[in-house]
Image 1: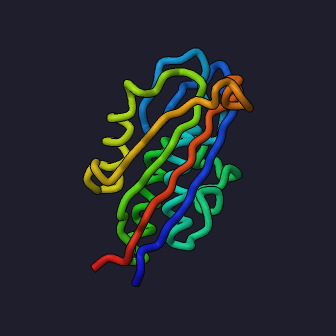
Image 2: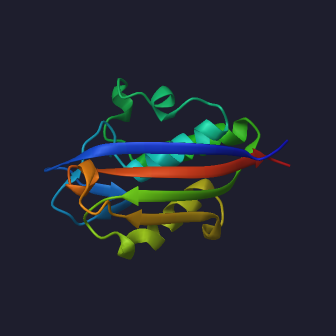
Length: 160
């Protein structure tokens, strides 16, 4: 069977009184992302890309925000569950390429840890995960600091 490609996207609003967690890393910042879980847009985009590549719907289908057991949950636990679903369906992860879109804070000091967290959770080598960060030059909701977004593409394949 040929490789399968998936795309994921997520966005959350920045608010006061919440921790900013991206790629499983708690980043010092005056605002955090609002959401039912820890609102880790990077990990949510990765989950959606992987689920999409396997034609297994999306993160909201598997972990609905209407279910209280997911309130405040660590998104790395959701990623671990996505990995289990892939394995149960005979898939393994080829690679992941993700982009976080945020005007602030600067994310470069945390990128390697994010990559390690995602790779470790998925049980793959870190050189098969790429995370980038960019701004939108103060344009749009991310550029004005209202929120943070993430895109992810991935390749999965049937396990041998």
